[in-house]
Image 1 (cartoon, rainbow, N blue to C red):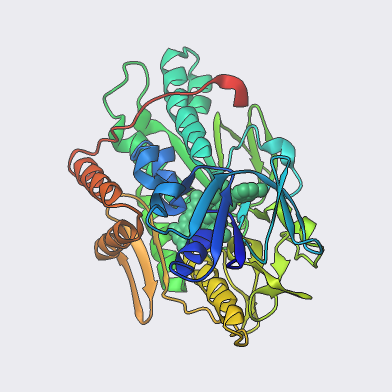
Image 2 (cartoon, rainbow, N blue to C red):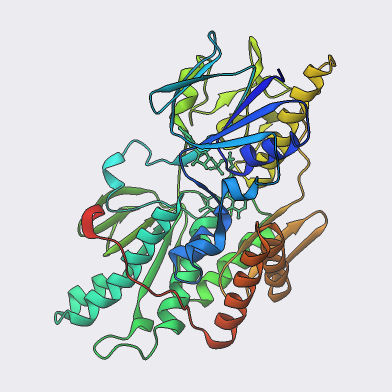
Length: 414
Ligand SMILES: Cc1cc2nc3c(=O)[nH]c(=O)nc-3n(C[C@H](O)[C@H](O)[C@H](O)COP(=O)(O)OP(=O)(O)OC[C@H]3O[C@@H](n4cnc5c(N)ncnc54)[C@H](O)[C@@H]3O)c2cc1C
């Protein structure tokens, strides 16, 4: 019988690992706790009512439907026993010859887990829908509020974290307030909303070159976003946020800071870094276990003295590399060490504005935004999604509208 490869996680890393095993003499089982793969770089667009969940996600078994050597199970993996080569999921166990762990990471609250209820993070479709609900509900509550001071609190939005996700969220919330909702209310002016982006380090988009960081900062200011850099959040409560000693009264707080690796890493019994990520060997396997690979956001891989960032390209390249190393082992060849090829960085700051740092090209503004747009369309999985997203973006670019302004879900998270 062909060797059995279990892939845990159908994100960028797990999916590319499974795809790299297409047609190979292996049996692949992919396990994921969700039945769909999410294109996380566009989650903020679902959170800000620009796209629908179905536009950025696809069922994993549909994506892999033509790959006959793969079976997909909807399963929550709770433990890995590397000595017995067993994976426990939903009470059942599966044995493997090779294992690829690609369960990713989640947001972290720097030891303040109690902030999670007031300041939801963005990782899953459910998170995005919850953010959308809170942003839209704040405007509805302000419309009914008669006290002007409380009205201003309801129209204040704080985004914590000035990385790409925080910058994208701040830009999109500003657009909703200044353009999309303008003229839709009778008792409040949504365009008078206050949007504050709080970042602990001295710059937003700190991984970008200085020139592009400055361009992003200016774009945010043009959208009326108050950018607070070198400002650390010390308290979050029902009334608002304390940041850099300042009290900001706000109804809506969105969290885009901090990363903690999937807790499954702990059951591997190997050293983890501060974010809980797994230290791996050059071939991406864990020490003492050439048959167990860890890839994607869960993996702490150091290249040229620096840890690789938690981005989709790293995850995809690591996933494919681990799979190819498994095929090398099956052919009796030695493993190849992994080396990441960096294609560059892109981030958008709202309508018609982005920064692109690809090779020697460092541009900001409208051209950068077009590049960002087509890159994301190209990356999306599924022809239908590409067409749907492109037409949705074209529509909202022309009309300033966000069609998916639906308040759904319940109050149970609040
Ligand atoms: C809001 C947001 C915006 C981003 N924007 C960008 C961007 O613009 N560009 C960029 O390059 N990167 C971006 N990233 C980062 C990028 O999405 C990640 O680096 C990438 O998704 C990591 O891939 P992964 O496969 O390691 O993990 P994930 O894609 O997170 O996949 C992990 C999978 O494992 C599954 N899983 C987790 N635990 C279990 C378990 N116990 N049992 C079964 N299944 C499990 C999950 O359901 C998920 O499907 C963004 C991330 C977020 C959250």
